[in-house]
Image 1 (tube, rainbow, N blue to C red):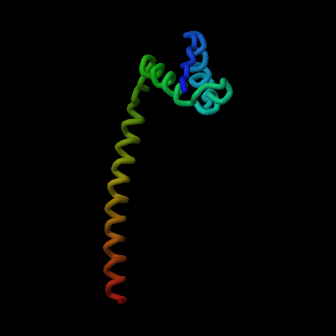
Image 2: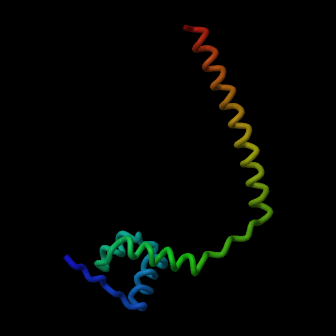
Image 3: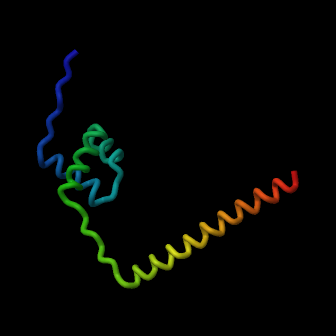
Length: 96
């Protein structure tokens, strides 16, 4: 059983990738619409994204302060959670 590989033009691959990138449609949906393998389109999109990385957004002072505040709150909540776990274990043992 011999299978021949389909060849796609550069224009076709570029247009397929742009359908995914610009419209936000899923790779699976675009692949179904175009009648191509999902893995093939996924590879094309992955290569395009490696060649065209999105610029990193600039971090503002507001964002830094917000992150510091959230990290501090996260640490506090983790400590409270650990304390509550220990208290629950203590009272469960005491009631047994």
